[in-house]
Length: 455
Image 1: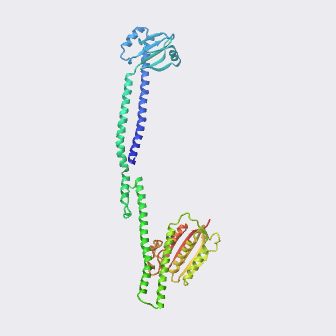
Image 2: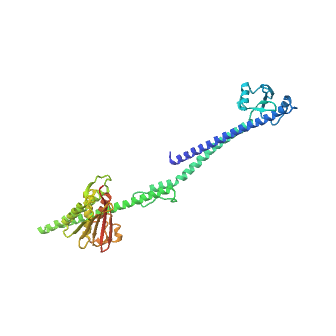
Image 3: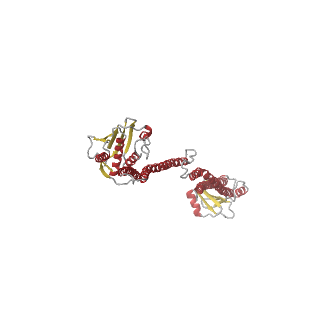
């Protein structure tokens, strides 16, 4: 059963329950009112008859029977019986003895003063009537033909109205459910039109206020993220292919030139050395791409070990100076640091890679190849500052330098691949650390890394 039919069925059930309860309440209220009204009419008529018999001396039982026989106000099949204190009948219109009376009933009426009961079609009322000198038991009964017919007619009307209401509600509910679900159908239709080749399409958000509009808006935000992710992935693949192809092309070209004719030993050595540099460059790119993929898909529950950040800084400095003797890396530690403040939880290889990349960038883009590294403890966090006096980064480039293969416009002539800062960003996020870059063109750059310490 689809949602439209479910809503229609639920709508019918709710209306049916409400209509049933309302009809039952109306019917039984009307039945109680009819019964009370009929017994009141019986009592009023019986009291009038008893007064005529007991209080008016000129009226005897025979005359009263004739009066009652021709009385247009008499109820259908009305019977009136009056007993004295000896349970003797003083007056009766029940000539066929249709109402059965016994002494136990008379005693009960004298005790309770009013008793209502039914015998067959008759509704009977017995009550105690007090005269001037004595008390009498008056029993009256009749058949409420008109009241029962009205009640039967009311029951028929309620059933017809109930059936008609259910029929109307079924049609109206089906139409209403269709109109209510129309925005969802529109959303489904829009979603079906969206594919991997048309991620630029968006779902109609309707009036922008109701829950369906909120759903469509949420879905559009998800499409924005998907489109951005696909574009990033596409650009990443294109840039990675370009970066890998460049050294491969250089290697292929040099080998082809080398094989065109015989060379001297020095020429072979020179070509092999150049090819080796290209292979190292290719290997560096592959390693960085592998690390970037590793950090992007790292499990959140990875078990880290305790690391000394100061030791990793000295190791990174030593490795960089081994390959770049012209680099100057000045490391200073705050005086308030102790062993507890210098320890963090993390992956040693990844943290060392991040620190190496940050220090190498500072040295590479400085005219004096100098970077100043400061390690301090602030507000329960370990703060690492890396400052240089290099060429800086423009405000526009600051927003993109952490994306893969994106570099500042002022470093085009300097060798690099644009992977380092994106790798640093991924590694620090994995370790719940953050970093921000402050830079002024031609004056220098400062990178501030904030890392959590071990508990």
